[in-house]
Amino acid sequence: MLATAWGNSLIAEIRTFKALSEIGAIESRPNADLYVQLDEVFIDNKDEYSGLRKEQQLTATFLKSESESISESDVLLLNGDKYKLQAICNRDEISVTYIALLL
Image (tube, rainbow, N blue to C red; front, side, top):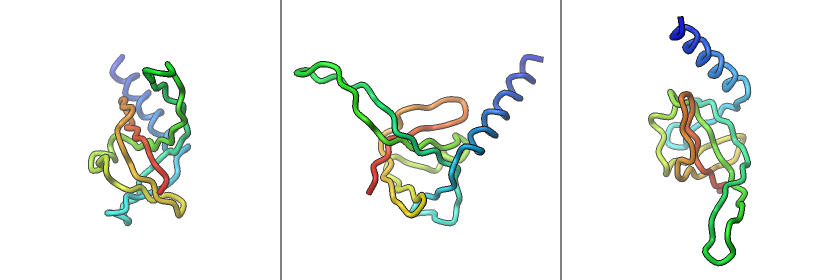
């Protein structure tokens, strides 16, 4: 019973992710549509001179099931813009989030 509830919860999370996402593609595979959420977040960075500071970063989040072929050097195509994917900054049961730089 717990496994069924867990499975239903994941299905609901994936549906919600898709409903809130835009369709993008990776430049090397432009015909393979991906669900992606582009967000601006604040990340804590510690500087030895000035202490803790928050930096605004752009992130691109993909469904984990669709992100297996994505690497940290790929370029995301979204709404006519290009974003260079960098380090993975978060990973959970359904998604993988990369730092993204607007090119």
